[in-house]
Length: 172
Image 1 (cartoon, rainbow, N blue to C red):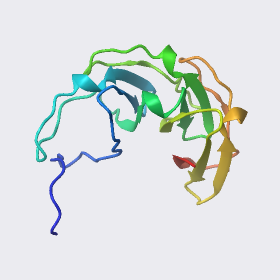
Image 2: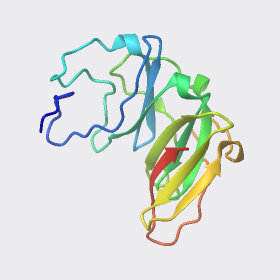
Image 3: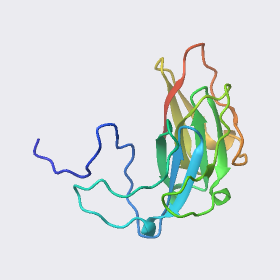
């Protein structure tokens, strides 16, 4: 009630992530349909508190951003899909583009994988936690997850019962 407005959102928009940057960071946005864009922080012009900001990525109809990470948070990008599949891809496989573009394919979506549910920039010594729609949580070390190319689906990270999906991931 007594807080300040930090951003102006449309009715169907949602704030999903906030990061502190240093004017030298590169921002990576990943979508539910497996697209990713990487652009320089300096491409984002400063705006007022009560503004909507500027466009980061041009989305296809029915697509949405599921995660935002910075290049200085890790050396690879972990991408996890709703059916328990995932992979790591080295950040240098993602070229820097101009803000507002369509991006590049970063995950091969199939019936077996389902849509992307989470993304984290990680290093070998990191661990992540995955939680399912049934409330089951597992913890996985990054060195146990394969590092694969950009346009691949990854490996099975968790066995799921029928009708259960991965809900969220978090870096430990």
